[in-house]
Image (cartoon, rainbow, N blue to C red; front, side, top):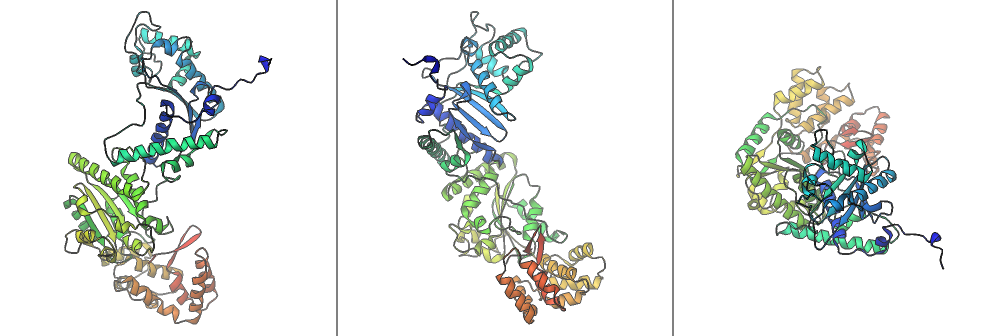
Length: 584
């Protein structure tokens, strides 16, 4: 006969570990909690949730599942009863009371996870008892009354004698006093009368998407348990993939960088845009103009303080995000709906897994914006900037240009501002219905021209006080008010202090409103020089990381450096990297 003293006793959770992932209340609660946590993180733009430990052997009676974040751990005790009888005081603080189990789990997790915030949670489909009875352990308070009004605050000096007596009996039951008791109560949630997941919302695509995500995650965990019976943690990456979302959900940078030269608002264009936004209730508005004229900076400056402003930059300089990814409709929907999510009531489903879901989510948020507009009179503004960059990307899976909402889908209270060079707003580049909404005769289009003469003078004076009024006039005439061309000229002067304003203007191309023609003309001067041609040949073969360094190194070896500076003057520094001022 086996000696009972030598028999290995399984931890309480080992039997559950060996069992398959079932379809009971406990398993569905775990699935629902994971979805809720990830939904909250998507809303906040965070990713601190690390994963779930199922049937944790070290968690005592809060071992049904343990949730782990970067700075917090929560043990869960799930109780299900088909009859759903009321939870009374005897079950909470009787001989085998639930609060004692929770406090024991709290202590075990505190020992196991030193340095992390510890919480425990009891969740049951059973309601709290509403009745009081002189024979119950706490006769003057019902369980429902105490859990609702007193448990969240913990013991208080102002408690009535009956409440203080209840806390005294709870303290005796869990074996904690003073601050230790208060700390445990603060870290313990009691959730009663919780229906069996999955939770259902109004009939519609959002609810259908959520139920599909719930089912996919529930089944994926069952498969994981079957394939990894000896492992404890189902990590975040697996959970996100099972739902159909990318493991990393951080938001894209959606702020256009400040210009290299001092910013000066285009007062005329700014006033026109503000007026158009004010008089347009909803639908499309277009901001167009040549490359480098300052469209992106202007719109951002005008809308920076709008309470419901969502910017989407399909292109950002300095390598901030892959422009091909930003041009994809799926990336657009994922980023924009996540930002709109912060303004309006949450959707039940998590994120956007495909373009069809993205279309539906954007329509949903546009409707919520319309309802908000009726109540509060504040418009929601979505900026989509850099459509001309999207038009240049070949072979996208699904281009953003072909997934813009139809004008009739956009309600009052929701404005979509398209910021782009004019060629991206033509039929064949965008859907015809979008083009028709923002034609030059639509009254919904602002054509941005360059800065005026005083504005250009103001920028130059901030950089170089040594220039004369005549030289500033010459620089204005050369750039035609385009801030990007002015940046090229000022950088050329900066690279070689001996260069005069007239020489800098002569060494570069003449800008007449067309950036393509300007770049072609600008290369005529350096290409007339054999050594400059040699440098350009080397640059075309060099990696993006060292091309500017190579050009600068070669330039220092030359006696006549002006042709080379015409080239390198189009670059700027950002940390250890060099970027072109404009990606045409």
